[in-house]
Length: 261
Image (cartoon, rainbow, N blue to C red; front, top):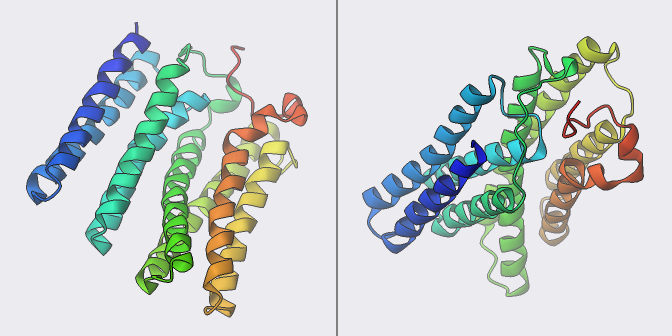
């Protein structure tokens, strides 16, 4: 019953963002359609929260919903700051991809919340992480754009500054996510850190973006390699988020919550 309503969210957001694209030269209409499309996703998340009687943050599908909700917000923030329409619509496109993935792979939406997730650190940890992922996805889109400009010898330095600022924001939230996760782990399992596969990849992801920050600080003229590092760091992030679940070691992970307990 809950999942049958999701198609209306997908269609509504798609239609509203398509209208925003058609009227992209009419500023007020464009913003209105984008906000309304984003509100549709937010309303569905709120609906899920009420229906499930728990935060909809347990499964990959539920976190994808939050990701699809945060991406347009990041797109709007970057648009207001740098006035790049392409970045705004890239964010909307990426958000739609995650909505379609969710539609193709429907969730069971069990109401059950296992004891480890009944912690006050659960919601802030996951929300902060997804917010960081949205910022860092945007930074990788900018990196790909920057690489294209670099190879076509039209590189705009404003693109690199934009990537830097998105990484600084994303990295700050990523660091908070790690901290909240350690506090949650201490409460749930008695240890701040256990080198669980998910935790190890989370650290590798954090180090990947730290390498980018250090390289930009110490070698600001090396733009090509820095942009490659940033683009590839997002691949590591995706492995941490999705790919780690398919590794053989994942069967021993304490961070597997998709199965019905």
